Amino acid sequence: MPELIAAPPGLEGVIAFDTEIAEPDVDGSALRYRGVDIEELVGVVPYEKVWGLLVDGSFEPGLPPAEPHPLTVRSGDPRVDLQAALALLAPEWGLRPLLDLDVVEAREQLARVAVMALSFVAQSARGPGRPPVPQAEVDRGRTIAERFLIRWRGQADPRAVRAIDAYWIAAAEHGMNASTFTARIVASTGADVAAALSAAVGALSGPLHGGAPSRVLRMLDEVEREGDATAYVRRVLDRGERLMGFGHRVYRAEDPRARVLRRTARELGSPRVEVAERLERAALEELAARKPDRVLATNVEFWSAVVLDTAGVPAELFTPMFACARVAGWSAHILEQKRSGRLIRPTARYVGPQRRSAAEVPGWN
Ligand code: ACO
Image (tube, rainbow, N blue to C red; front, side, top):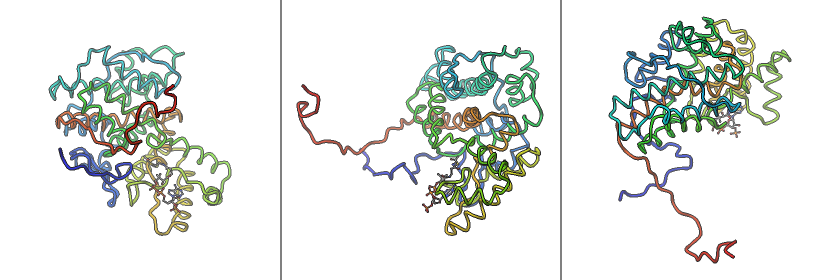
């Protein structure tokens, strides 16, 4: 029995695994996928190549197109539909537990299931009232992002394709966050890949993780209406509230994803760029003045909101879109966990009542 070590609350600062996939460079303001800076990838390669880089360490063969498969759950909440439909793929496709697969089989099943996440979100976005886009139309898409948009809207506007590809690549992987940790825990039990991916979607759904860049859009709306960004920022901070899209738990420099997505928004001529830059300037000035001892820079959520808005993605689809991106990182970590073959099973220190009889517990009689 190894010596027990008490971990800090929230496991902050604990190194749980060795990984070859990625880890943010928190002081250098960089994010590298298997050593490649995201600055080199965003706007250059399509998302499916980045899935390949993260999972296989190679741009080839990448992620294949999704198989034709209807969205099987329609709850009214696209995130719930995604999580449930992914889990259902195990019985539908007869997926076997990871424990019973070799690494090649596990990789194939991951690719099959992961790409369905994107198809399910596109079908959710299209809504139950509209007939599905014929498969032959979807097959005209040359990249996964094009196919996604055709499945959703019947056509793929090039600006929306570029915006979605950029967002998916920038948000594809970010080290040991809560949903990735969840995916690894489920994979470590030897469960099937659909169970691991759907559990990760559940972890992502929490407001402390999947976030809500929709709150950034509300701020932009208000500044657009009022005109004076500095006055708006001061009012929010004077009320003791936080500015959405600023600050980060791990980065002590600018969030590199904010930087690439700002560049993308400018390149795409996003209609919100002007107001976003005005708000960003005012926020950074005011935060620096009020918190001179902290680095409070723009985080990924701020420019994600602008880029997704450029692609015409409604706020209720922001979390499912995040899942479409992060399914790449989850897949890579599930495979890495499978290779390690180790069950994740920490210990808890018991701090409950001392030994007692059942009769001492309220409600016994
Ligand atoms: N606006 C105003 N003040 C802020 C902000 C902000 N966005 N972020 C931090 N601060 C202030 C805090 O009030 C605190 O001040 P105090 O020391 O006087 O109490 C100080 O900076 C440190 O704050 P912490 O909560 O310790 O910072 P932490 O690094 O733990 O929090 C977090 C990071 C949660 C992201 C925080 O910056 C925040 O709430 N930001 C706004 C919400 C947001 O943008 N969330 C998305 C994050 S990106 C992602 O999760 C993928």
